[in-house]
Length: 222
Picture 1 (cartoon, rainbow, N blue to C red):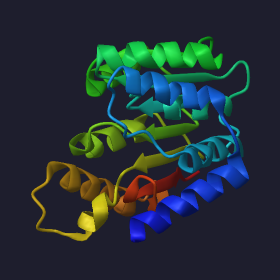
Picture 2: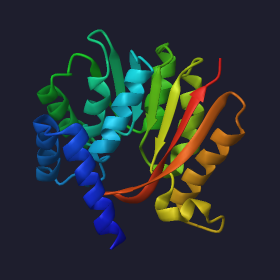
Picture 3: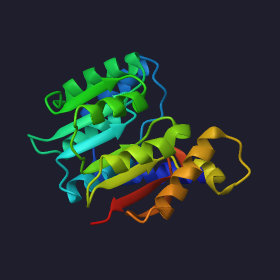
Picture 4: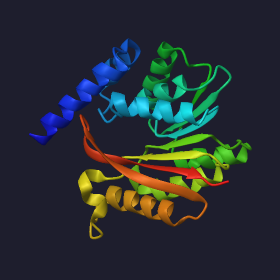
């Protein structure tokens, strides 16, 4: 019953506050046709990412975990024409699908997809002298969340917004005895964000079409 209610509310919110989105519907159709896992953010969550980037007036965005580009497109929509979004994806197939989706959405000129293990790509970005980003979205393999947070802080400046997805894990994040590496990684991410005096942060539980989970959100201090 709870899942039915959560889904109904998400559908109502999406229909009422977001409306039809043929570009993103095509993104999801292409993802499904290529058998990508259906773990994209929900439409209202994507709109939240877009609004966070718009509120921040983001011109440079880093996304760790591309999948098929659904969240990438939401974030790219918030960028000005001269903006830049770098997204990191381990799978060549996923990156190829995402590239097609990003091009179809009209953002190929401002989105760079890097293929390979994200931790290696982050080292490469640092070696190339990549500048700090205005918003960083962490949505890749959860066991590496603590490492991704450390890199996010390296690529931050005062005012940078850091968002971590899927941090509640059906409530298991509150279980200190969990041996699930995804839970352990998410729990450690929250601990790091809560204890690092360089950033102000919180986390929110969410329910909806994607079930029970949540976001961590922080802003680097000045």
